[in-house]
Image (cartoon, rainbow, N blue to C red; front, side):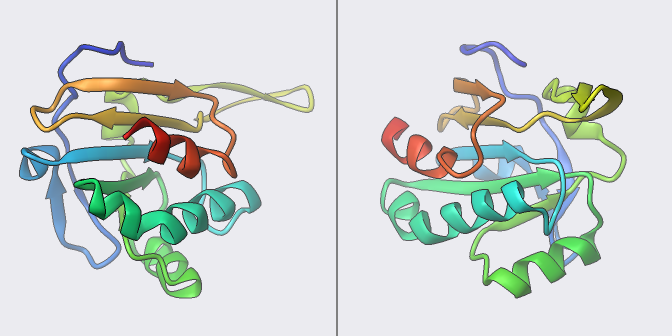
Length: 150
């Protein structure tokens, strides 16, 4: 996980509509950048729906929400449509941002060791500096937690 106080790494990734997004285009806004393992899974759906429910409050506080996983643009589009997600989902199929943000880790799933995305959320300020970093977050509680941090 990256340290609080460090400059957030730049990235350029396609969203669920295939449009490119970079961190620098959000300069002047707070960014909640959350990394999650997989579209349409239990925890990831709870987390995304929690962010969707609170989205108007995040916008009121001048923050944007960006969800990142290694799923494809098409997978993100289905996820967005099925749950009516109002925020941007970024497809990092090459694990570019996932590796820059140090969230690709060894995971132990019932004794089976695999590599995967560890659910992590960063709060990035208007100047692109990481002000909060939360690793191994609880999916259902994370949106509320981030709203409090703002």
